Amino acid sequence: MLITSTGQSSLPPPDKPLVEDPVKVTMDIPLFYVTERGPTPWPHSIFCSRVFAETVLKAMNDLLFLKHMGMVHIGFYNPRQARKKDGSLIEPVRWSNHAYGEAMDWKGVMTAAAVFQGVDVVHDTTAMDRALLQEIWNRCSAAILAIGRRPEIVNEGAWIHIGLWPK
Image (cartoon, rainbow, N blue to C red; front, side, top):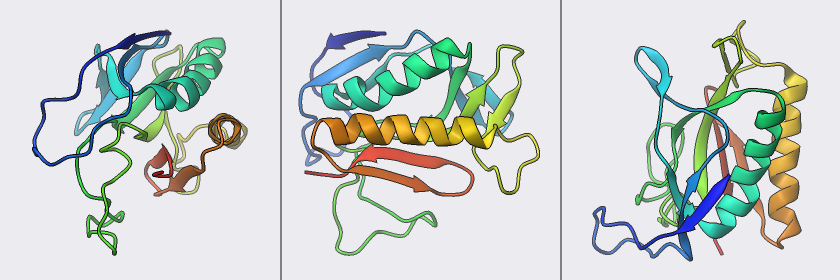
């Protein structure tokens, strides 16, 4: 995994929070973005904070690399207000940890045989193994706790929000 320092995002809105120590991350594993046609290759680096890269992304990269799997997501950095699963704003209104470059919405894994396995182990018959899901959850939590921050890992059903609780 390659972590490279970068500047702040130029995305709107102009009053968005600054990302602390912004970086671009090139993973050692394939990345996929979910569209209406399913997961499609996502050949981009990830813009985020260094602390997110060195905790969550490193934990995901290291484990999935060993298992010859890719990571499937529906988003990383997004300068927006925090919201609930249904899209309504969380009260009191605050910036999402996506706006700080410290979160992702994780959808599942892509196996070496190019089979998508989602995180919805309750409703999806093609979902990933519960043990793998638990191992990813535990590794990400442990990495965040190891730097003295609080994990914000929320199972939203069809995806899992993985982030660092805002400072």
